[in-house]
Image 1: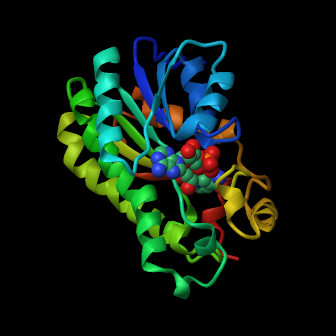
Image 2: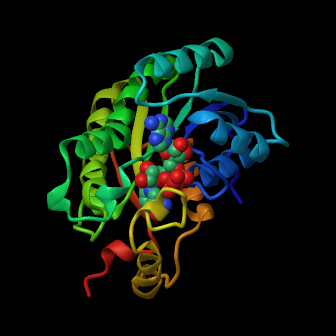
Length: 257
Ligand SMILES: NC(=O)c1ccc[n+]([C@@H]2O[C@H](COP(=O)([O-])OP(=O)(O)OC[C@H]3O[C@@H](n4cnc5c(N)ncnc54)[C@H](O)[C@@H]3O)[C@@H](O)[C@H]2O)c1
């Protein structure tokens, strides 16, 4: 098998809440490929989870709430000081108020809309901005996590679908702008996975079941599936790929009936 060797490369992974997080699936693959990893987290609870998860491998943990400009700048300044430069950036962050993921979309509040779009879409632009000085020297690869609701109307995803549409457009716009620095930007559109955030969507268990039934692969996707595609996009194997949204959903999105 052709090995992917990321020895000597550094990744910043944003969005591991626990061992079920999509970002943890990415971390496990990057670690197996030999990458040096910096994790960012929000709050002491998630720091504790990360400390337990990373007990047996050397890595750095840095606090970074993407709604706090000063904290984003400080986090990347610290990463720059400690690592010199980075090669990979993984954005695996989203948030919407619970009431905006259960009621009617037409009732979305101004504040709920702003929060979802700010945390789940603008944050990619903001962290790319902060990471740019660390990436531009050698080029690099950025990925973000999207979902089918960006391009299809999915019941109950409501404003999160709007945020994912903005995220996928931000991926294309960043790809266009950063390409000349050899920085690639792509999204993975993952099928439903039972994570902390996903449980905020009403009826999520039914969505998992429907997906298993209708997807060509007749199963739900795993962290292993998502991590594998992330590893490909973050490595030189994907050196000619940018601005794309790659579906890791067992083929669910291609099905008509
Ligand atoms: N689980 C799914 O079914 C699924 C499917 C497709 C896409 N996604 C996307 O994958 C990404 C990761 O979600 P997940 O399902 O692994 O859930 P998760 O709850 O494990 O991860 C979400 C992360 O977002 C972080 N976050 C929230 N607000 C933040 C803030 N202000 N600053 C910094 N970080 C913040 C949380 O700390 C958490 O680590 C999200 O973008 C999500 O929309 C998930």
